[in-house]
Length: 503
Image (cartoon, rainbow, N blue to C red; front, side, top):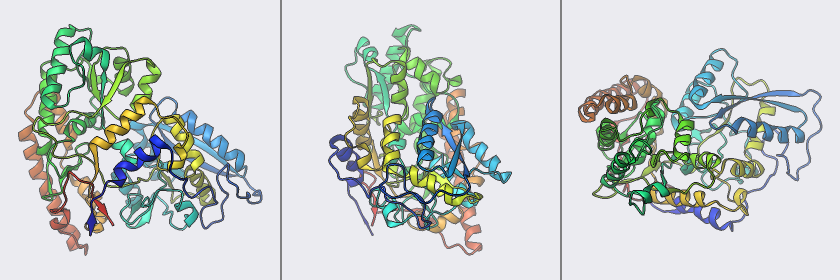
């Protein structure tokens, strides 16, 4: 049923570093509705529509330049498609999903929108019937633009077998949690390279903070928002117990046993608790946001932090000449027994609203967002690896990005998804998520760190409650005619040290 192979792990390295792969399926007009091709296509535009159709596009503004970039791209689109007027509506990351929910609740949902939050949010927009399936819009020419498997049966671009969004980025770019470090600071305190183990990390952070005497701190976290705090947990936890997925989120499942396993993350939560209790972490981190973290790091007040790939570009904007290093996050002293997991080659990013009254025009915009032209512009702006090899061909990769690709290859492996054995899970996964004990596990971990509490008993208590919830929800699903069991959550033959691919 399965094979283990490394092409997903090496694909980006091949085309990003050498730029020699052939271009994907081109810029032909996509979709069965006969809509216009993306700007730059050789296809002849359709006759000018009698009425200009208005499309509202709701997007996430994670960085200062995001809104301006998308407005610029929509200007390019509208120049080639004068029959469509696109209005960009931007919301910050932390407000976006709530704003989206409110708009759909009021029957005022946008025509196209970002899916922000990975597979859980993809499931949410599908279950709430906010999203229009795109299968009928995508023809072979459109599908051929993307790497093989991007829209396969097990791709996360599908929910319940239906395509719900257009992908743009290599999902590993969103998944990787590197250790950012200031080379000059580490060298100043006697370290020629970043720490590779948990004990080495604690030692270096402690030495730098104590000897820095308030001028520089060995380590910092990016605030008390659970989603941001989770980056430190998942980064330091990527080498922990093999077979466990979801360290960054609120569903931490051991796919070898099929059990909720928050306790498996406690070794790194304990590290963070002790560092905070001993005042090794930069003071005030609880009130920081990502921008403040960037400022402190770029100014040389913080030696190390664990973050996301997109942050490298933001730090460079603040201090272009900074001697910054990007490395794999430290692993347990006994060695790596697992990896940061990704279950898919592609994730849905841009979706069409089921409420849209201008679906043909909305598809034209999605067709453009799924073009090589747009992916190339996105890569040039955001410096985020995109799916289409040809989109990055000929563009020189920065030293930071080369380091990031190396970390991706070193720290990420393909893993099963919770629903890989039985996609009936998708029919009640939201019920499981909604029924999970409150506060959720990342909030429990955060409280342990901030209140200096032993995380082990807290996690054990949460695991017991969470596993009871899962059993109850499976029974309710069974009573409702859905076939699923705990056995479907188990992958006993999976080797967490290797890629897991469904043929």
